[in-house]
Image (tube, rainbow, N blue to C red; front, side, top):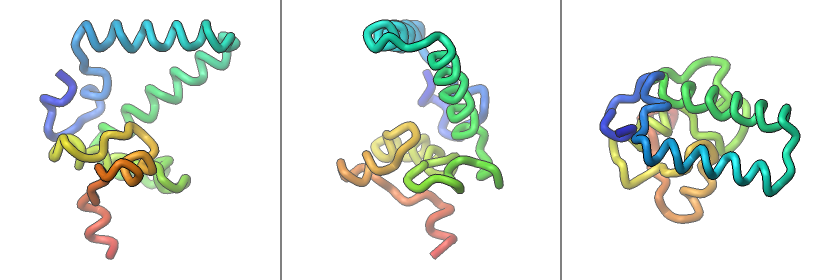
Length: 114
């Protein structure tokens, strides 16, 4: 469902099928249990994960976006390219994975900055 949106917007960040949401929930809960995470750490992780998902799907390269502060962070332009060309830019946040596996594709913003 999520990838039916070719132009991302903030609400599309959490648009997923029931099976996908259930699998993500089970993975998050089981990994937190296995690692023995403190509830506050788990809460902070989920808050940050939701923030980044909405930031990546908002459609704007915001001046305070984390991709402008940290190297190898994707950001909205990177993720928008993933929605347009779904065989590229798979990594949700850190682009080094796409560089390593050959699935990196420049975003429109990258082309303008050259």
